[in-house]
Length: 128
Image (cartoon, rainbow, N blue to C red; front, side, top):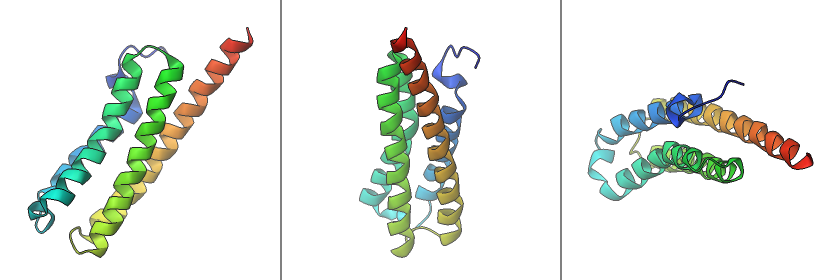
């Protein structure tokens, strides 16, 4: 794998940002638009995905980065859970939920693969 110089170069970060922007779009549609608590909680969790990737990367320590990638993956699950509730509560359209659910599952898988890659690097370096 090529050396990554900034978190903005990471595909998982780019995808997390794209999903967060989509969450903002959905949050601006009624009735969620007027459900301030749910709206803010959903946006916060969505932004947390990319923010944790960025924060963990900036520590320049793979062990710490892995910890933050786990937080990011957890936030992706949190967004999926919130969307599931919001669609059942009639605050989010089912089509938006189904599309984002798939995208979030894929992103979670990509984050997990990245965690596994970094964990292997960590384990290999500790064996030396």
